[in-house]
Every structure is written in structure tokens, then in C-alpha cells.
Image 1 (cartoon, rainbow, N blue to C red):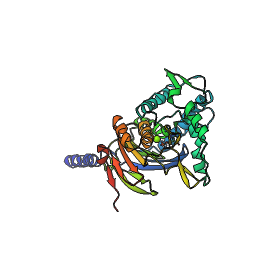
Image 2 (cartoon, protein in one colour):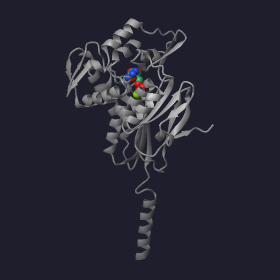
Image 3 (cartoon, rainbow, N blue to C red):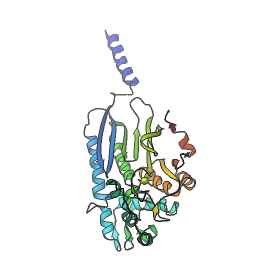
Image 4 (cartoon, helix red, strand yellow):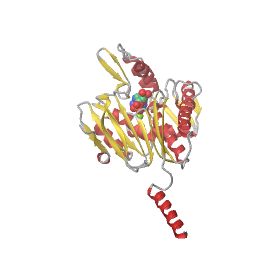
Length: 339
Ligand code: AMP
Ligand code: MG
């Protein structure tokens, strides 16, 4: 009798061990609109906790409203921009974001620069793209030159938490916001041991966290920049990382038979035109993947590949003539979709 009981107990322990220690994780999905784009969550949760996807949406929404938004009155970015021309005491979180971004600005010789908010505002591709404008008129050259002169990280001073922007220099964190949201989501997930795995995407940026219940690699699709409903291939991911893509197909306006997209080259003041259709970056931090995808898009393939490696990241470029160029590390992650 006793030995039967012992045998039963051994069977239970063995079953638990083989099924990955503990009860099977259940999948939770949720889709919301955050930062003007789609946020999609898939979380694998052990036990009961139905609030987590809602809390993740809540913290992303709060991050936008309190910190990153250029439009919400009272957000930190809004307050900084409304005091452009005078000194402003920023939060530690803002100090960290600005210092991080400045490193990428310096390394990319200004190709990436979150202090060209006025230039971005002048082009205003975001609202033209939302309205699907077909008769878009680009800004005049004198206005572009003026925005270039007053904007840019050279017109910014940071000493500890004291930030001072030259008059008319505006902060636009659009190129890193999604990545910062993913960094905050990952920090939140690390405090939740019941989450065994997660993939969260905000627009073109994705966080891959933990493992899937069947322990197979995560497959993250890469959009075909020539047909945004299709996929170029996918990345096979086995460990926590952040994947960001910047492409000319994401937001653009049409006018004079031309397409004007949303990633601007501070060297010219016009949409970047270096023969790149899209760039995908894999990094260990969300903000970095997002900053590098924008920076590499502006820099083009040659300098972009060097920049990505300088920051310990992998890059995949799709060029305007349809070539795919990758860092060595990216080659081991990328799988071409079967025809
Ligand atoms: P992303 O889609 O991450 O490449 O970010 C593009 C957004 O970043 C644009 O919609 C602008 O708000 C902003 N932006 C455009 N050009 C640049 C640039 N050269 N450096 C930094 N931010 C930029
Ligand atoms: Mg970006």
C-alpha cells in the first residue's frame, strides 16, 4: 500500500518535471492603441493573474501622457518644449533618455538627433500620413534651413538635471519612445515571476521576454518594405532582446508625384535618401534598438552597419534595389520566408 503511494508521488513529481516544472502557462492576448500605434501583447502566465495585460497597457499609456507626448499638455516633453530658450530641471528618467540619445547622436555624427523637433514639426508628415494626403507640399527651403540652424543636439546643454535648449530648439522623442516603453514593460515583467514568457510589440518595435511554454524559439516577422502586408522573413530569437524596424513605408505623404516619408536627414533637412527601404535592429535595450533603427536608416548601409556593431547590436538593411545586407550576428537569426 505504502509503496503504491510512493510510486504515485514519484509519477506526479516526474510529470511536473517533464512539463517544465509547475502547471502549464496559459496565454493571454491583448491589443490596444498606444502612442498613436498598435500595441500587441502575448503573455504566458502561470497561475491566475488576468490583470497583467491591462496593467501593461496602463503603464504604457501613462508613460506617453506623463513623459513622452509632444501634444499632451503637462507631459515632461511638452513642458520642456514650452520652455525652449530657458533652463529647465528635468527628471532622472529624462536625463537618462537625453544622455543615451546624445551618445547615438555623437556616434552617428548627428544622423540621429531627437532635438530636431522643429524640423519634424515643419514637415508634419505624421498628420499628413494619418489623413492620407495626396497633394502634400513640402516646406520651403528657407524654413528648413532655419529649423536646421536652431535645432540639433549642439544647441542643447545638459548639466546633471539642468537642461537648456536654445530658443526654437524642440525635443521630439518619436524615434525612441516605443523602445523606451518596451524597456519599462520588461522592468515590470521582471517583478512578476508568474510571467514565464512574453512578446510585446508597439508599432515597429518588439520585446521578446522569457521562454515559450514549448521552449521553441520566438519567431518575429520582418515586414517586407515593398509590400507592407507581406513578410520578408523572420528572426529566430532564443533570448531576451528588443527588435526595432524603421522603414519609409511606415508613414508618408504624397505630392507632386513624389513620396515624402517621416525619417529626416539632419544633414539635408529632407527625408533621408540613402538608398535604404528599411532597417531592423536587434539590441539588448529597447531604447537602443529604436534609436539605432532610425540612425541606421539615415546613415545608409555602409556607416549603419558599423554603427550597429559599435553599439553591440545586429542590423538588417533592405535597400531600395531589393538587396538584403546584414551584420554577421544577424545572419544566424534571420530566416527567409519560404516562397
Ligand atoms: P522611427 O519610426 O523609430 O524611425 O522614428 C521616426 C520618428 O522619429 C519620426 O516620426 C520623427 O518623429 C522622428 N525623427 C525623424 N527623423 C529623425 C532623426 N534623424 N533623428 C531622430 N528622430 C527623428
Ligand atoms: Mg526608431
